Each structure stands twice: as structure tokens, then as C-alpha cells.
Amino acid sequence: MADISDYAWFVRDLKSRLYAGDWNGYLCCWSDEGGLLWTAQAEDRVEGMCGASEAKPPFICATAGSKVNCIDAASGEERWNHQLIGSSDLVTCSDDGNRVLATSSVYEIELNDFIESTCWRFDGDGNLVRQDTFEERPWHLILDQAGAARMGVGRPRCGLIMQTDDEITHLNLAEDDPILCGATASGKTVFGHASGLISLLSKNGKKMKSLFDGSEESVLTLQSDGKMVIAGGDDGMARAVSCKGGETWAVDLGRPLDECTIAFEILGEKSCWVATWNGIQASLWVIGSESGKVHVEFDNLPRIHTLTSRGDRVAVGIDDGRVMLFNEELFSRRITGEGNEPDGPTDGLDSSTGQSRLSLQEKLRSLRK
Image 1 (cartoon, rainbow, N blue to C red):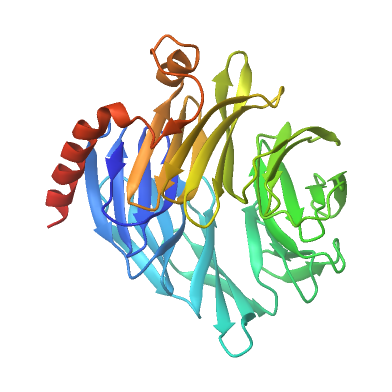
Image 2 (image 1 turned 60 degrees about the vertical axis):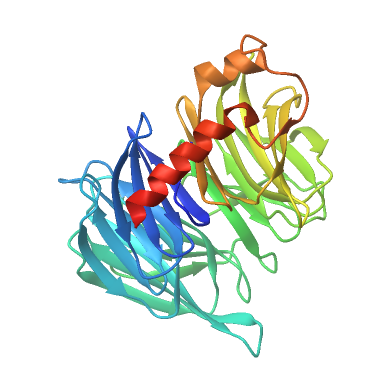
């Protein structure tokens, strides 16, 4: 567990390091063992992060406030930043760091809606290659190996917007059905729609296939591992859907879903981690991906703002500033009873280590002063 002293707003797990950003633009990097490696300060709330692990040297990019920031992954030193129009939103980059893409949006308070968005395309040195402005707000951004970006967008046109170095094109693939979220894994991209539809983007990026349309509740969060999708919305139903089509299981968690991720195996099947929020407190559920069995529920938590997983670990960013990293081996021991943990809901995530947690919090806060 680590503490960044403010809202943990975005967490990114890359290679052997963990990166996180908070509500006030504070950025941290930790080692595998939880040692704080560096801190940095961005303009405002960190909205998104991506990493170019094969760039020389490797870097991370963060959207914060009205800027996109490029930061050296090893030292935390800023390499470049660029002012955007409106508030910065999504960010992605190629593994080699040759292209960095960010989106920003302008919100009109009187209309209570977004009035325009811009997709910005940079090279690895921060030089602007292209910028395009359009009416729709992107809710998912992907960059393929050929350098083409695709954005799942909402109204008025819905569907996808594709941008390359040379042009921008609208693809009318989801007429009158806004895309609200998306996920990309193992070369497959899935989208969640306002109608409750979960769709799969074709390999050429020009068609959408329906995977599930059995609910009228908007899909507000989803994740995929390329074989299955875990998704949900305000009705409290967590659903597993096969990337070949069809619902595998559905579990009523009784509260709106905030975040989800698919992670390491527990008892022979991958685990689905789902965060819910009832307006007062959050719960974190760990569910079997094939069986739909609830392995454990952690309740009485502050709101969970981000969930991410890679390999043998899961990172959780919480409203009170904690960033928690769960290891597959240790977590599996506790789930199977080897760690002498009680079955059923667990209050507050490992309360038996409360004193050591407070001690670590105090040490990390002192580093920030």
C-alpha cells in the first residue's frame, strides 16, 4: 500500500514500476517493492496516463488540467508539455514513443454539455503533427500499429472518428447509440453503448459486431482481456460477456458499478475486480471470471477511482489517497485460507495492518513537505 496524500485519480502499471496521479496534479512513481522513486507536479488533476516503454529513453505521458505532459519514466523530469484547448481528457502513445495522442474537450456550463473536442497528435519530442476539432466527445482512444487512431464518440454523430497523420474521417458505425466507454486488449477493442449494447470492433476497424444486447441499462464501465468482457452500469449488474458473443454470467451487486478490471487467476480461473459505489461508501468485489462466484467483498471503503491490472498484480486507487497493490501469490493464499483470513466481507481492506499503514502514510506525507 502507498499513499499520495490526495485523491488517487489515475493509476498506471508499467513493467516493474507503478505510476499514479492525484486530484491536484501530484505524480508518483514506485518500485515493485513499494519504494518511492520520484514525484512530480502537474498543473491540475491527472485525468489519464500512458507509457512508451520501448522509447529511448522510456517516458510516460499524463493529461492534467489543460495540458499534456511528457515525463521521463526513470527520473520524473519533464521532457515537454503542450497547452490544449479546454480540459485535457484521454491520452495514448505508441510503444516506441514516436506518436503521442491526446484529446481535450470544452464544456459549456449553461448548456450542461460538451460543445467541442480536439484530438492532438504529437511526435515523441512534443512537436505538433496535427490537431482536429469536432463536436463529439471521445470516450475511448486507441492507436494501432500503423499509427491510425480511433475514437469512440457520443452525440451528435456517434460511432467512430479515425485520425491519421494525414486525415480525419467519421465512421458511422453506431448511429444514434452513443459510445460511453471502451477497452482494448490483445488487439481487440470493445465498446459500451448508451443503449446497453456491448460491441466488438472488427480487425480492420470499420465494422462493429454486437456481443450482447440483452439490457437496456447504459454501459458505463467495462474492461476486456481479449477473450471476455466485464461490464456494468447504474443498475448494479456485473456482466461477463464472451468476445465471441453472448453473456456468460450476471451478478447483481446492488449498487452502481464505478470501475472494473480482469486480473490474475484465483482457484483456476481469472478474476474480475469490480468497484461499486452507493453514494456513501464503496465496495470492491473479486469474482471468478468463468463461474461468476464472488470470492470476496471488501466493503466500507472510500470511493475507488481507478482499477488496473497487469500480470500477477492489481492496483487500486482510492479516494483517500491510498494506492494499493495486490500480489497474486499473497492474495490467492488468503482467498484459499492459507492466510487465516475470514470468509465473507472484509471491512476496510486488511484492517489488521492498520498501524503499519498509518506509519507508511506519515512517512510518505513527510516526503511531500
